Amino acid sequence: MRPHVELIDEVDLLWHVAEFPHANGEARQRNLCYDEENGAASLKVEFLTDWQRKGGLHAAQTEWYVLEGEIEIGDTRLGEGGYWCAPQGTWTPGVKARKGTRILLFREFGDWGFTPGGRDGANGGQKAELAICDSEAMEWYDVVDPEHGSPMNFERGGTPVPGLFIKLLYRNPVTGFYTRLIKAKPGWREHPLAHHPVFEEAYCLDGWFDYNFGTMTKGQYFFRPAGVRHGDFTAGEKDGCTWILRCDGDLVDWYTDNASIEMKGDPVNWGEGFPLSEPPELIQPVRSRSIGPWKNPYYQ
Image 1 (tube, rainbow, N blue to C red):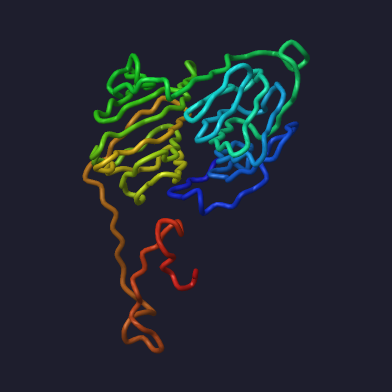
Image 2: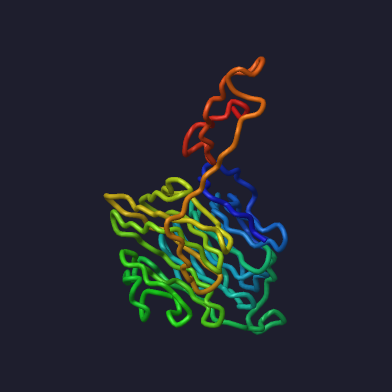
């Protein structure tokens, strides 16, 4: 399964050779989150040259979201905000990317395997429809509007949260698996802790917000397995915050109010008065060099 990643800045990650078999061109990737059991992953990809790959079948459900630059998928050209999703078993037409293009790439249920072939050939067993959209041409819908904006099934406990707006990019009508853009208005606040029966991951596209794991800003990312409590959200007062967000099912909020975490104990072999020991320096750990300096002297 994928590990809990929270909170990490992409610039703290190494570039690796991109996992694109049967392609022409050079690309590199940063691994935001990687499942070592089945190869599912969330990646930041940069194309170092013009790049292309012929049509075929991905081993995984595969999604691309264009951060900057330009791609072509079949006869469709997509710029910033362009998105496509090939559900597992869906034939994908040829894809091209211009040099310098950067995308987010999401793989689910499988690894980087790819089998080239024509739609009607040995690899042409179509199981679902390819989804393609230009998010820049879409309208934002209020999250409390289940007809347009929310992928949540309200009969199953989905919770509308005022102050949020959605562009739904993809949703599996059977499983509820979805990918969406979500925007919090400036100063948006939701104070209780929440957890969900599904995983939740997000990459910050713009703005910032504070919550119990720190301050999330542009280029930062989390992957949160089901059941992890999080919350007390406050969005930036000027611009709010915008994410691309994915869940592997309908998002149901289970809230915890008046939550607190407290650690107590009696010192044993440290502190003032113990031989050859000084009173300890309080250390506030951080998870990213970009968020702040490493405080622990053992990890300089």
